[in-house]
Length: 172
Image (cartoon, rainbow, N blue to C red; front, side, top):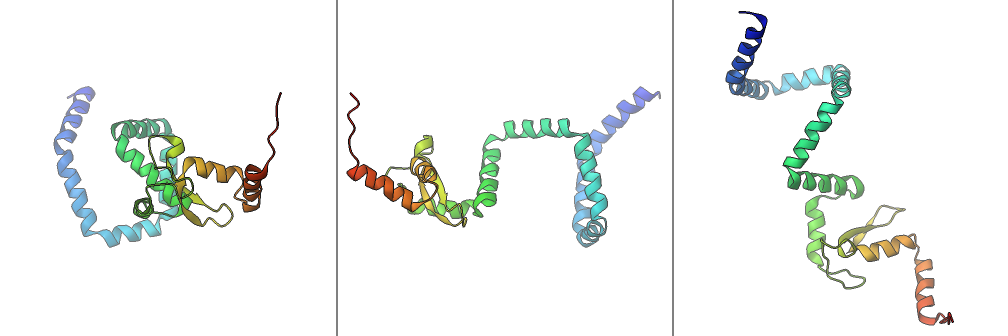
């Protein structure tokens, strides 16, 4: 058997035994959880370096695989991205966010119905930029408006006063 035939043979053999090997590995992992955990703890730096080296050497391949997965699993990828965003930015779970949404189907400021298909009517999590404390869910328009006033009530009150008593200027 020459080298090419050996390579083909190995490839076919691997494909035939792949499922059995996966099952054996799974059984081993389940039976040796403590042993595996201890190894990972004892060799943390070594494993991190190995992982980092692999990721750097295979960056293009990994990016391509990730892209293909996202394209094949659009809904799951979107859900994951939303989940990560909510957790990282606000410390919220999707369930907590949905509970807040279920309490109100309208913006508490402008009374507009939330509509996820229209950016300005999309529900947004409003929070204080200084403390990070969540104030509630409002529409995109109101969220932007508050943001333009830098979360400062005194500026917003001046704007309200302007709207009520401001003079009308004739441009002609």
